[in-house]
Figure 1 (cartoon, rainbow, N blue to C red):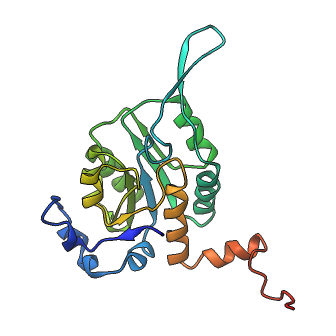
Figure 2 (tube, one colour):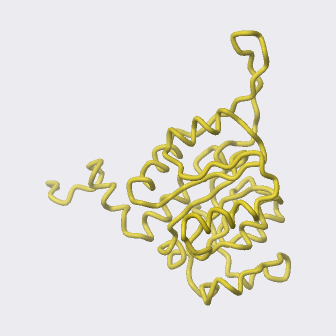
Amino acid sequence: MRGCWRRRTAYSANCFRRADFLDSSHLDSISDIAARVKLLLMDVDGVLTDGLLYNVPDGQGNMVETKAFSSQDGIALQWLHWKGIRTGVISGRVSPATETRAKQVNMTYVYQGHIEKIPILEEILAASGIAAAEVAYMGDDLTDVVIMNRVGLGIATANARDEVKRCARYVTSTPGGHGAVREVIELLLKAQGHWDDLLRKYEVLRENAQTG
């Protein structure tokens, strides 16, 4: 089963939303909202990864923290870059692995070591000129809800805390680190009319293919 979407009224009693400034999009479908997204922001641990942290020795015997990322998420992030949809991360932890991954997939915004995420969102919006209603944000834990409350498309991963899922407009069917980001990117690309172009690029969709 694919991810599920929730009307804002489904969780308004359980989750504070300062979203009236976002316009009348609360009546729109997920596809309509996704069609307007110009920026996809996300947490790292539990979203780009499964939340596990690995401590491994470096060449000097010091323990270094690293993480595992999904290759399918990675190529999908490249697709967004090709289509002009910006991406970025806002994470409470500082990790060289995150910095390296962000460069690999051409992320525009990389903020690490920030548990208080609202000022970072405001900084990104001011610098980019993108409206909050044109932003999607993926999270899995309580610290992400304040951002989900302030953007057009708040998304919880399948492994997110139940409280976070109640505050989300969309909940993925796949967990973080195992295709959640890919699922959301496919949603955005389909809503914005780019998906068939990619299928043709990789010859999955061949308009002139012979049948029989």
